[in-house]
Amino acid sequence: MTKQKTVYVGMSGGVDSSVTAALLKDQGYNVVGVYMKNWTKSLPGFDCPWKEDFQDAKRVAVQLGIDFKVFDFETEYKHKVVDYMIEEYKTGRTPNPDIMCNQEIKFKLFLETALEDGADLVATGHYAKVKNGKLYKAKDDNKDQTYFLYRVTEDALRKTLFPLGEYTKPEVRKLAKKFNLVTASKKESMGICFVGKVGIKEFLSQYVETMPGDIIDENDKTVGQHEGAIFYTIGQRQGLGVGGGLPYYVVDKDMASNKVYVTTNLNDKRLWTRKLRLINVHWINGRPANNLVEVRTRHRAKCSVGTLYIAPSKKNIAIELDQEIRAATPGQSAVLYQGDLVLGGGIITL
Image (cartoon, rainbow, N blue to C red):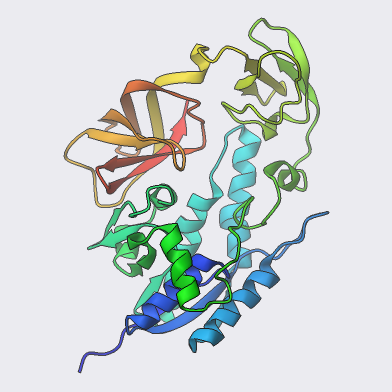
């Protein structure tokens, strides 16, 4: 008789992870729900939603009749994700904490802890597909989350299940109602991945000292004042506080002089590029044999076709794109695909 496999499901209290647990139980796995306690700190005017999320995850586990555990990763999360994010912003780059969370917490620390605790596999509510240690885009192109998963290792993927990869979001909502889950109508979480409904400006203001500075246009004219260069990212249009006339777009910033540079010209050459340089490159299944790739520079962005040029170290690469793309942002990730297969990617640098 084949031993029933035990799957530890990361349950965040949302509908996606709830349906993940329900589907796996329905498929005959021995399912254990795990709430990862990553962040509990509230900010002035913003309550961290962790208690509500924890209670929702626990309610679903009770509904499904599965065991439920809490893994406290708050210390590691602060060090690996939050501190990393803050330091990157201080340098003037724009990091993606979701990617670092997946790399260091969900598919490393959670996986290792679960396996030590008796799990055979782990699962999350990500919209992605995994097969034989390879990562593929989800069925629902609008919800596909492979952009955030490109730094997960092949070894980790071989121990991971993504049941939602075969479903669209509306189908998942229907399944939640079919299973009569208490989270069936719960809204999507917004804001920073670990804080909730709070903007990056409000969050960073708790950890860094900022000074007002000049906003300078393409004619070297001061057109306004900003609240701190750290808060702005390349291509940004909203939140500049410069009224009247055509909209402004951020094209550069100088952290040393605390200046933010903007333009009203959407054709400004500083907004567009056909060349990308990537550092800290991660290949999921090894370097691809074919150098023709598709590149995504932000979640849900349309992929662009490009050619890889790999440095001897293999940790840095350059990509020559067939067409220019707008607002390639230092600190963000460029993820590489061939069809639905995720090859890996790296961090955009100037």
